[in-house]
Image 1 (cartoon, rainbow, N blue to C red):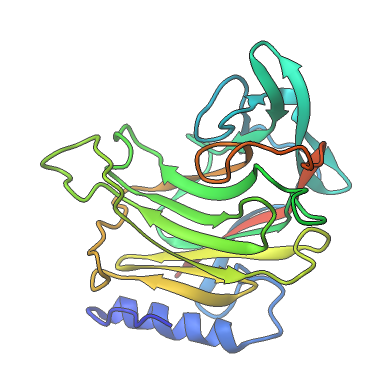
Image 2 (cartoon, rainbow, N blue to C red):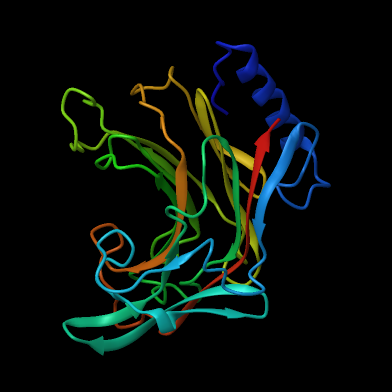
Length: 275
């Protein structure tokens, strides 16, 4: 485990609370109220709350990659937000998929951010080729990407069972805005074998001088100003994005064995903050 910065009393409190939650096996969610951490928001997806989420449609490189975003691929089923991906020819696209974002509706500066989900792309080797589910956060401001950072809480590609957590930023900001030259710190952890059939919680804890990534409340990466390379941590509140991309440069396109339709089930999204 990376060492958290001890540059301030507030950071020390964050560390102690993180450790307490790490060793506790009784908490159902890392974002439950626990001591000085208070759950401030939760969506159990009994309905699609349009005051919190906007369904995305059309073409989007970051959310869909080689697929087209359509509203019918986003729906509520049995208390889940479902993001469906299909082999479906529309216009110049061979696939369609679904995504929601909370931009300008729900956004936070610092906290714990938890998503309980069953991920798409499971099955035999090859059946998840080209499938790229993600839970991530972007600045709720007018900044140019990635000047104010991007927190990728969870990504998985090709149904390989590896959970990735990554932070991206512009390492030449503010001198050279709107520039990305690959500045990132990331790591991965192996998911349980039932990641496609059972709910697991993917989370990040973001404080003034650190970001920690967790899988089922267990930290696997912490980023601080002492990390190498030195990150520029987010200065602004951030909103959430939930999506399944199809294809793209990282996983590559779907193959002949890729199974469609495939489903991304999200049971809840929760946020806790320290008070």
